[in-house]
Image (cartoon, rainbow, N blue to C red):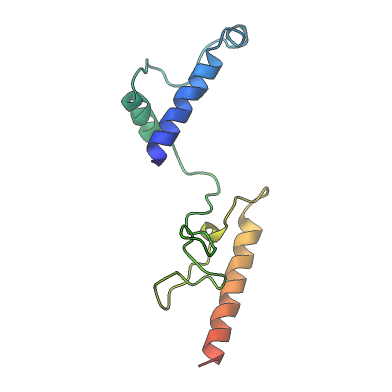
Length: 120
């Protein structure tokens, strides 16, 4: 799903940039350096060029719905004794850097763990 979504996004971006009103503003296309016609061409381009260099969040998001992975105390749904305490639990990407929220999540997880040990 992710690969197809990214491939279709690249194709759409090229279609937008190829519109007649934008053509006078564009000297040349930077990437890709080859013709691409099929969805598989775009998939291959994404495989070669995509990278995860930003601040990924939300892959183990917190919540109560069926797509959520952890509860409000960072416990993984259905797996006893396992918590996730990193930026992946953020349900949405923050508008700023993820460093401070990730530190806060770690601190909060430590607090949850200490409290659960004291309850034993």
